Length: 411
Ligand code: PMP
Figure 1: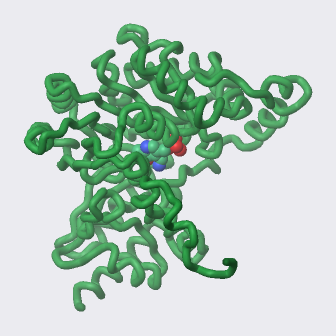
Figure 2: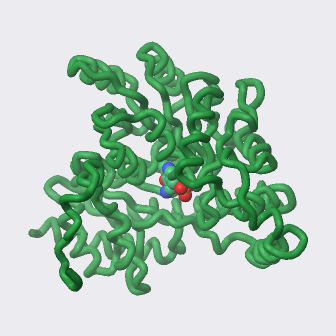
């Protein structure tokens, strides 16, 4: 039947499709791209800050007669060795290096960290398996775990990140239900959406708990190099060579349009990941990989990251000061030291998802907290991102949002 809105394929879908729902962020996209709306919703990096003339010239060269025969060809499933070497150089900034066993040989190049999450799920999860994840957690990871038909158990955080006692408790609860958690999925540094960072003291504690429980740790670290003060926070992986899989991406340090990320995994796991990736995509784009390794070999990437950090710091400051100037009493929010996001708790009785249409009508967008919990809780929270709009637009967005909150509180 054509022209019907009913889905004629319902009885033919695989089981796993039943749990699949469109992400709240994707649904917001159409609205937030309207110019009159100040979007504090999406997590789009500010790619206009890149030296686009030089990048464009490089892209032309890499696709041209000198390099095209290689860059436009298929390549190996694990990813190009030149890029895997660069990846090791980048990871060393987070303390992951040869001293803790990191080697290009154990890196798998992926189509963004998102494919890395999917590969990890394919390799480790059976339907009904339990995954532990921060509450709230990255919406794109929840989508992957849902597609794998895993059950996500959220572990609460505070300003210092994941709470160790809560992790122990979650492990006990899962065990008392006769199950075993396969892994802990965590974004320890400048968390999405929480905007908090796992403290130094807790890093060792969390790893020790995981080790005792035989719990694998999936460390997802897209924002680690985008801290606003001082040196990068050493990754969890820098403290353990076993039991931690580290996921990285060039989406925030270079450009998400390249769709290049990676996994660093223990040797045996690395082989499984490559096989799973070959089944899925054959190989990552050689053009994108060469672009990145050439960019990192020939352009001032450290200075570029520094300039990204300055841009995002200014925007974070703009958001935090606008919030403290304008938000009504009873509103709370986190104070990120890096990354893209602030997690806001609404005054008592307000619901971020119910309020969203009125916010959109007031020309401001955010992501309701409900998208970041597998069970759809989190309605008293919302995520604000400051990565894309200018400081002036951020302030205007907060002014509009404060107006919406004031109205809601009168209802
Ligand atoms: N993990 C986290 C925590 C993220 O915030 C994102 C992007 N928003 C990703 C993974 C996916 O990044 P990409 O696929 O672009 O590398």
